[in-house]
Length: 216
Image (cartoon, rainbow, N blue to C red; front, side, top):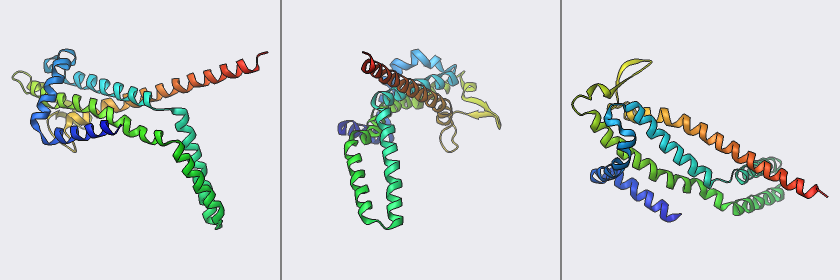
């Protein structure tokens, strides 16, 4: 896991400070993505949507694979109960009870160290995919849109403006804002669906185990 985080950190540094690295990364991604979702710059919104779907799907599936939802929910409930007990002990001035609660908190944290590392693990693998997609979008897709004959493809309409350029900035480049607007809702829905089916599968397994135990 430390190796993955170190690799992601190195990738971030090279990505932001080395134009040659971004170009090389985009070139590698272009060989695969341009024939699939580039469309020669003719359908930029569709390309952004599909790129968002790719990154959202991969990162959400990675999070689903590495997350134990049942243990995570159990740990959250335990921490909430212990925090409430700690607050009550401090208010009442019961130092012995406060010490017992703190010991229990340490045990809970010690038994769930791997769960605490899960977000870092998910972020590490997800960032690798996201940087590859962004390198491609930021270099080749926008260069294709700037090619002769494709100038009109640089613009899209929003409720408050009829002509907004993908290459201009507001808080972030408009293509990144549009990408996020398309990708984040899909990722949220997919995450909820995967979590629902994971809990449903776990519940069915528990019910099946109980049925076996009570059967004569």
